[in-house]
Image (cartoon, rainbow over all chains, first blue to last red; front, side):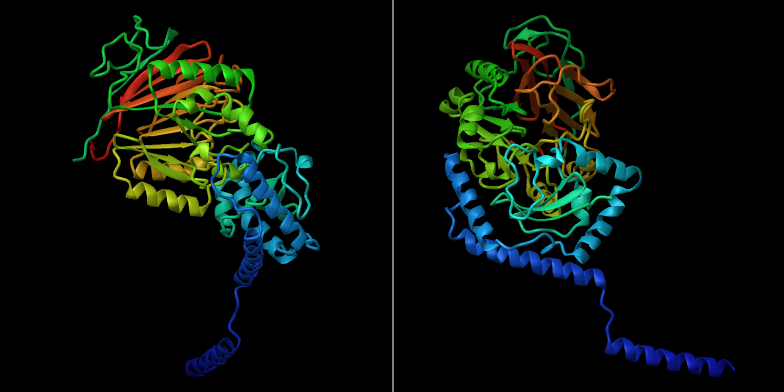
Length: 188
Length: 303
């Protein structure tokens, strides 16, 4: 009897093993994170190619040159992404994953502190246009992103950053001061 | 050789003109080398001398008044550089704003060769890193060595403490053999402010690194008042975000406060001479509202 069970189990194991070998299981989160990386890399490739056409951003004593470089790059990006829409980087699937990744950091007592930190000196959400290609307003403070939230999200290239406005997450191009994409209701 | 210093001393409860000797009460331990009753920094030849200002960029009359006091101070205490603790430019950041909120208020100091080192506050666009007079070298976080002495400063971007910055900080701290390690950034890890308070989430990330690598002193702004915190786990913390903005009466009742001042604008002068650090906090009337010193907490003694 025991031998029969063992034979069945062995047979199942071999069969399952064969199935696993034929169709390796893919971690859906990893697949989405890879998708996100590809989208970000795609944006950065475009941004870097445009950067070469914009007035160079280098150290200067003249703030007008910094502004000219930033505005020049922003104009080129807006032109190149004229048809870009919300969700091109934060696709619905990626947005869902991000919400899930951030959720543990915003629940419970620790989460209360994190939410409080997000609200610290945050601009009035109405002051920041939730619009792809919009300029982040000069006069609006850049709200601090709590480090535990940053740690829960994929690392971005230097030229991009996450910011949280109200409950929404925006992806901001630091060099051009442009909103690349946004994700409504990111924080539950 | 590993050495541990524990001495610290403060002069409190008095308002005195800078560098003017007065009879003062020594509130804590007597400094080992400086005579009691002398509120002035030692102002020693060859020491590292610097100023600290925070939350400055309003372009208003209060910023100008503090800038004047700072300039006056330099006539007697020739500091070579100044640390800016963030919120360097409130509101707009066009060329006129840089002129009105930085270049004009500190013109005398800039003309006198004072080098400013800025960090980003929550009101600052990261593009400020490319503004040469802020000496950030195009970086949102960076470190630099004092012109003399064994002192290294770590300038952090506390708005955006991501994994890359934390990894950079650990690498920089572990590689530094400076006797004094001083971190400065915008958001306070400890504060008694009713408006903001301590950033405990940030503290969880930074404090372990500061402790592990022997950071002695942490300077922050954000809160619009002056507060010297009682040493926390051996590290000295100052909040100095009232160099142009003031939140009167905002220091709450807290047992971490060593000295608080929320009734006027203020800036700090600091001097490092070997293993000793001296500080003097001056308000917009030119009065000293806090002064004292301490020895660095641990680490290899460097010349």
